[in-house]
Image 1 (cartoon, helix red, strand yellow):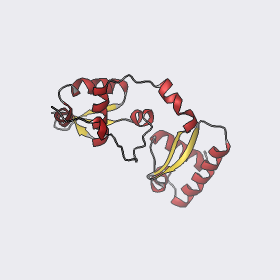
Image 2 (spheres, rainbow, N blue to C red; image 1 turned 180 degrees about the vertical axis):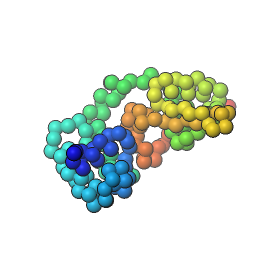
Image 3 (cartoon, one colour; image 1 turned 135 degrees about the vertical axis):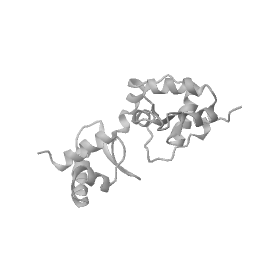
Image 4 (cartoon, rainbow, N blue to C red; image 1 turned 180 degrees about the horizontal axis):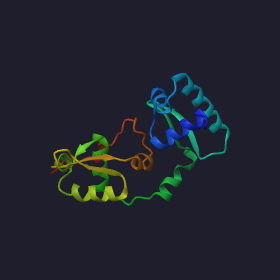
Length: 166
């Protein structure tokens, strides 16, 4: 049977986003006090080992992330060749959190269809058909958050990439 600290580590790895103590307790099927002890054990372990990963506390909970020392590898190993238009479309999707493709086209123009296809292929955007079948819901993926080193709980200052449709 794995230790609670190992279970918490697995949960943080699989969820790839900050989780509160309550959420961790729910996933680990234990109480909050046990999770807090497990987190302390896990954070201490990571602090004393030679590892590329670390457990950090963010404003929305605890996260398993790459140490800053290794951030340069993200750009080297996961390069994305995105044009300005595709970046602006990606920024619009990230700002909205979840947006209908038809609404995105109103904001970004008809080129957004091509941008969305490119962003889906690169793994930065997830596209799901709406229940009425008329359009798609668009959301950024975990790869987006990892690549751009943006936690889901951070305020995203991407307005500079949006331009009004002419």
